[in-house]
Image (cartoon, rainbow, N blue to C red):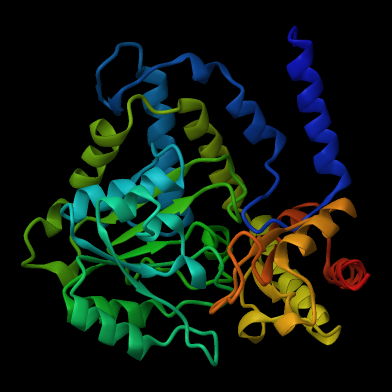
Length: 399
């Protein structure tokens, strides 16, 4: 690279990544093959539209790449092409979710999503997001005593508010979601059911987390977390949702979503991203990846159990996934989440400060931190390593 400044900064970031313990739940490390696809000549091609329906010439090869990516993702998640459609053009998770609402919810309509303070995502209708400015969020959360989803309470909210869409799948929920119960709630309230599986998509692919596809009308996901791909996103839509028969436009979900992505939100797709996603999907469709996914969950459980043993309170009492929330404030007996994150980073352990349900502290300096096991599992760490990591965290936070 001739640009020495950027070259040095990239090298500095490479070294930083190598020397730290990365416990950011939304990060992972991609393979050299994924990086090669990202840095390929595909970045030179502009291809507005979809395969065989482009607005530019010269698309014979990129059409094949996009089609291959779609084939691989349907195969990975065991979906039949006559039942499910997938759009692989979203640039990231936020525009993917925005596109779904644009397609299915009238402006001013209701999005029923988990409160950000309880572990939801900005794009599930939060007021500071575009999704909360163009639509109205109907929030729900977890039970204060158990810190688990209360499905009966969620049902009552849905029956009272009658949202157009119910969103499940979160950024800070360590427990497995009961998609069947959400399907029942969506049915009785007349809503679409959308699952944002961005955090646990790799666990679904690795068969250590239940698949949402039996119950959802729409599924969105990023590709860079547990799926271990580049920063991109995908939208799956049911071609003929049996629960939505008779509802106006129910059979048009894929077409509506495709139009919402292009020309609704985006121009030409990032074809280098799509190729890199295809590479990651092939890597995920292997016995080795299933072994990896199992180890991710094992490692998270060990980290959770060890921190609890050392006296830290784990939100909801544990984890079923790749992430956990740790209450470091401990009702004033511990430290704030910002200080915890800062201390750990100085010691080479990277986490993020995070609110816990019913937090009494500011989001800027909340009561918790969020930890994830996916990135360090990619580096080959096993249970014994996470025992050591828990012990290091404990010593750093108790200084």
